[in-house]
View 1 (tube, rainbow, N blue to C red):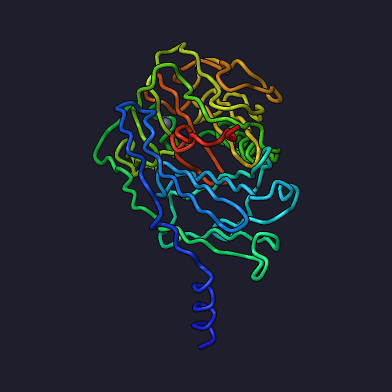
View 2 (view 1 turned 180 degrees about the vertical axis):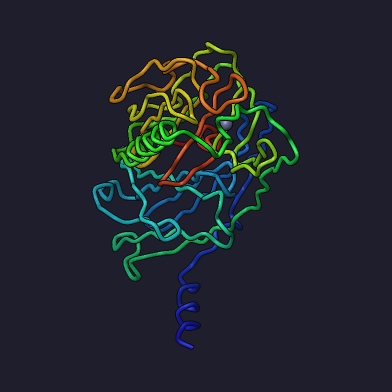
Length: 320
Ligand SMILES: [Zn+2]
């Protein structure tokens, strides 16, 4: 009884915004085509923009809140995405944030809460509800790939096990970095020529064994092809790893990271500030790799997301 009352109360304050989702008409046959979804809400005291490639599993949602009164830019308020506090970044006239949708999200509505006594004088809060769009991740079965046996064998030497453990710790430390948002413009592709050979969360079976979902996107590239940082940031890891090969992780701030695997050569070191488009290394086939390619990965708020969902965002820079 008590629960049903709470539920009714909650839903009375919830606004479903999926009905407002509009798909842009433009259809260019390039991988950078802009067919993103834009949700715009005009509230009494602010306007809200959400942009996403789709509101589906593994995607990132870009959030912008612009107060109607410029003086409110100095007020503090709270935004909660699916029960988790969100890092907000103040631009000149608005606040921006990035929300992940986990590729493993079991389904159901997704909630966005905005808590503010200034924006919502009476209630102090408002909940928006977004419907999840279906996503089907491909499963590739019965495919034998030639991976060196050292990566699938269960009998690894102690030395190797120690190295794997060290790699894991280094990665955890790097992904634990916390910094302020280090960029204010859209993302760039990591290679000049973009050809995707394996998409995000495709599951492959290696040597007959069930594999884990693909944690990023593979780009075709010859050995030695320059790899460019897809966004401004700080290098938090740059070293050889057991599985990832020559591996670089860039911290872009607000728990947004991109990472670059299997490089032939790493051109940066930990602590380096990198700019979007800057060469950080070259394509190779080091680590657990079946041939030269770039594996690009991305994490937002400790959630693995499809890096393409970051690359296609168009609204990050504030309109002048
Ligand atoms: Zn890959």
